[in-house]
Image 1 (cartoon, helix red, strand yellow):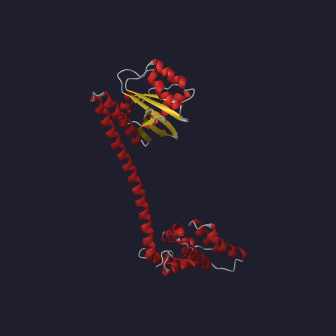
Image 2: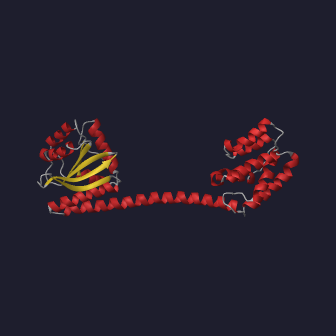
Image 3: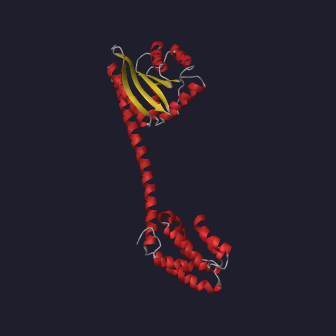
Length: 318
């Protein structure tokens, strides 16, 4: 059977015979199809014929024209065909029929109930419901898998970061920290460009070393990371701010294992007149990982404090 014709001929014939018996008047037949969700354009030709001449068409012809139309629409009217069948097979109040039609209507409804249980139309509808359920289940599972994978990524970042506390080689620790922080941003779905170098146009070698660049809410942040024993001072802060000043629409994130000197924080506050600057400690990141908090929310709160409160160095524990 052509799947575009969802109702097989015998079922279509039974529906044409039954629906007029379940509805006392011609107007009631139209209301039945409207209640089943049949769109007005599909009802309009038949309805206009009835409106022009009430005696030009009887209830059975109304049902035949409308059912034939929605049957020919294939998948686009699957929901309407399903609802028509549902309303007929679940019909119980036969007292609403004309008294002379009640017994016949009961018999036809029972016959339709048998047909839909064995014909392809019923199977197709059952399969459609199953397919919809499978899609919803797959989507839910995909969400759960994504959450699980993210947790695994974050746990790996946490392990890698904590292992650096036992690394005595400052150079190796610093390079490893770059990778760990970039992996942290990636784990939270933040776009990352990892560390890179820029060389001069006059063969002067490397002129800039960028620890990393992230994109958050359509803004680019140049990230600088320092794992020193002493707080970061003005020279190191200024060096990174110069990189940001030279790039339009860019912002700065500076991460320090030992905090920042008061003059360095003051320098960042002055820089807020031109650029958004965010200061963060390694301890805040450790707290975030240990307590399974959201990195995106932490950065957003820091950015908000920087812009609104003109405070680039606020400790956020979300």
